[in-house]
Image (cartoon, rainbow, N blue to C red):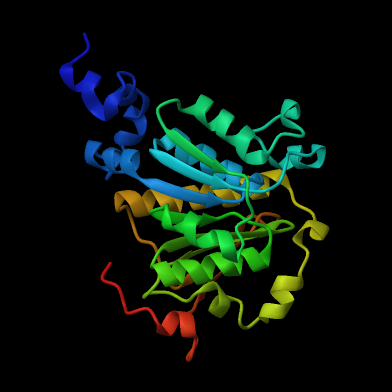
Length: 265
């Protein structure tokens, strides 16, 4: 016999049963699930990383996903993108992704933008999300996202994939370094001019990166665990372990970081 509680939580009769297993976890109370259902997460990039992240956030019950990507699905994309299939070739990635995400969870809202997250589009896109997720392969676009997130005080969950390795970083304005500080030791010019596609990508590695991003986003929304604001974590999938965790902070004199007052988190 179905109880009144079962039929009224989150607006759809099936939702309470759908999320029962994750709500059984410590910290994942009905109140935490409600936070997920009212959250707005903006995801930039619908490649292998972005699709994995979006899929897990949709299944977790994040109420509104806002996705952006200018490209169409190509045959060479399929090995790293588990959410789309051969029938999607030639379709805009955001259109194919929206269709599949709403099949995964019909109770969520998905807004798609077939645009590149460049300087002139970043402000409006980032303004619409509570948390921004960087799943892009273009480093200049990553830096544009970082700049605007710092200006607007929005948290950016960054992932970068190269070969068998990926890295995860939560940029929290007022607490952690921006991406320009993050890549300062490498040299911004080297980062921006690098061609990740030429290095190749293994589908499960991209999916791992997106999965880790989804975990960080869920933690932030629900207030679970700790999100080290100064840690860049690198994973080596070939050797099957965390390669290194780098403690870092804003560079002295960085105009983006210096403009942000410390936040109480």
